[in-house]
Length: 132
Image (cartoon, rainbow, N blue to C red; front, side, top):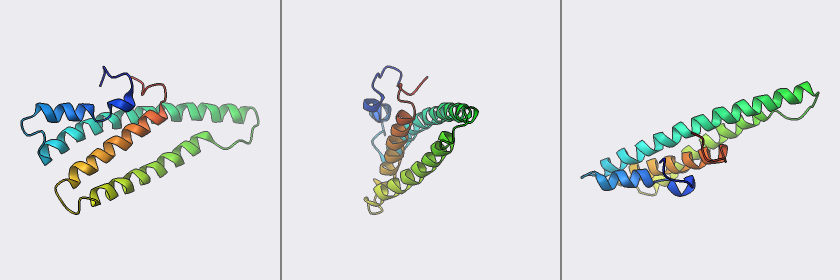
């Protein structure tokens, strides 16, 4: 993932490379394995981005309190948004899996969905490029 400059265009590239390089990469098990590895990568990026955003939000909240402002808590809003996003992600991916009607493509569809939405959320929370 290090060579890619536009992270939005990179989502799925590592998984596809993995599938191409493995003899059984395009089997259901191979696809799920490769997709899950990339999903974990994006999950790590999301966790880092959320921690940074949370820390920044708490600092902003503290400044607002010090100034006597009654503005809503940015940290609370971030937490609530993230919880709602997790519910959205899970429901979306259950739906995408259901489109396969119990077929073997449901597993890869679900993991692809989780990978894609996790990557999008990581990029959203850290617009500067998903940090290092």
